[in-house]
Length: 309
Picture (cartoon, rainbow, N blue to C red):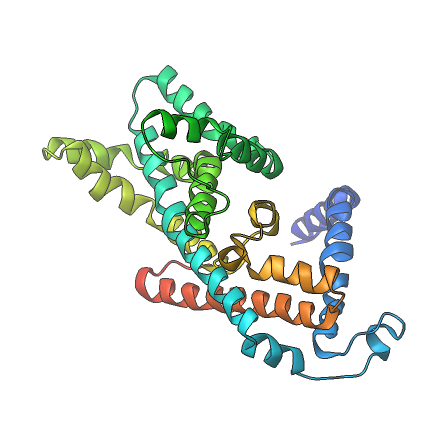
């Protein structure tokens, strides 16, 4: 017992000696998260106050749920919420299953050089910045000089105003996003497929299963937990449409379908200086995202027994 106690004390002393290195490593990330993620959370009080810069957050008069009622009942806000939900669901339907399909196809490639080439081609667009991507799209789809419209005219068609047609905006946003992110999004599924049991695959081959049958009955069930977790995150982000790409693609002609909560918050808060109303809209978006995350996580736990917690 004495030897065990002495060994425990030495181990504790040895661990304590290196604790400072551990804290030194995580100090900056913790400080960054505290300054830029937790301290700004105090600003949500503006959603419940008639905020005045002169009076400050604490000195501004309390208005309760006034801005939330205003956001949920005004005609423009209802349109913004509808646009956000449509664009979010459209993005989920397209951008969630196709990276899984790409991962399965890449995993089935046996020629290593061709496999690496496919991966490189699909990953590369992810590293193009959003500003550059939208600029490329504008140049290629220009009504008069764009290469795509020139090809359409050469084939006997009529030039299309891609960025000015409200009916095209959502598809343009979603499918260009798929082109940019499909390769990067497939990485986690490719990694999961690499861990599929070879014994199961060999047993399926012995039983006479075709390649498609092996994918359906061996590969996909094996990575189902990974798919479920990613689906939970994706559903939680349905209403969290990014600001930058939508704002860059937006103009007066497509504003009726391109105005989403993030751009609405920017225009109301920073352009019109209505900080309380814009904070309420942003907080509403965050609460809906959190509620969706909880709901989908609960459903996933009941159906598949896989969840975040």
